Image (cartoon, rainbow, N blue to C red):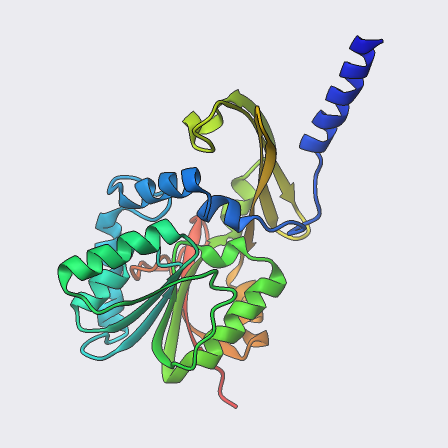
Length: 290
């Protein structure tokens, strides 16, 4: 009887682990960016110059900053805000070129590092440790950045919150630059299930754990979910990593709803020519004319 009860409980647990939620049904960003262990892992990825994980390779960031400075005419006194600034890889470089920079990020660990680096370099950068969905300000900015496809991790309602916020803080003639995942990338993704002891080399916890990864694909919504279930001795938790994928037309429609007009489409945030078959693309936008 005990074996039967154990089997029934285990079967129910496995059903919950492998259950497919509705698109964007759960939001668990804090579990990634504010957890003591995972935030340290993410910062290490940010600072690794040779990987595209928490942020892109530093060589690409240099190219990207050069293009942004040239294309957006960023110079002395240009007011720039970077949503999801991480440890300041863009903000510090833009401040070195004379811009007045604000960076917002959920990770207290990354913001602490960014502030220390700015202080050591003598850079006057305003850093805000906050979920950027909740960020409010009376300031106006000439350039609004959201880089590394952050918009894709947000639900439709959250995306409208951010785009509306962007419009409200733009100066007349100001521009937004952000990048997103493409439909071509969505087509290349497949549903998968993985199970491993200390999944992803201990990324999720300093304590031993068993990790389940379910990759779900939602064809109608053009969304994927990486659902991580992490079973430790003292707790079980689930982290949901949602990604929305876009065509230029679908992204243009979301911008239009927020009163914004896309005025440039690029292959990336370093100004590469647009190619519909690549994994990502970038756009530049401005306030829609009334």
